[in-house]
Length: 135
Image (cartoon, rainbow, N blue to C red; front, top):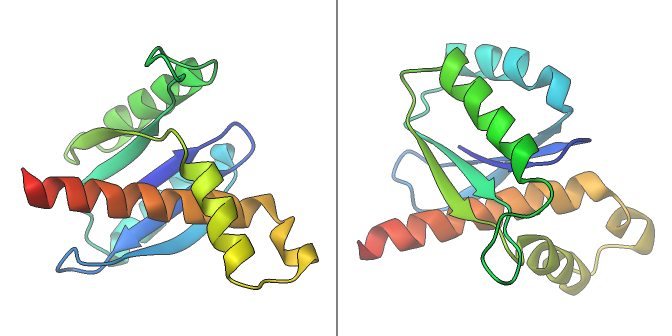
């Protein structure tokens, strides 16, 4: 399960049991994420959390890094049995916007920021799985 964390929305993506394809799951407000995950984990197995790590072009942490660190600490405290991997999230939002534009979705739907967050989380998870396959 991957998260594209934002202070207004968290995009969530999951993968199939064989970890072949990442799929968008949902967009949740940060204040609702723990309850959402507790309910989700009652019916679904999650092997690992992958969290987007916000970085600047020079590889230093971005302004949102402290918020993401707080989110990661909350995940560790609430779900200590689930390991967490960090994944560089640079360009995922731009890639998500390009995917949305190329998909032919109408202008009103393209302005849905939650859609960008969902696709960003999906790109993040797919990238993590591809990287893992080469290690």
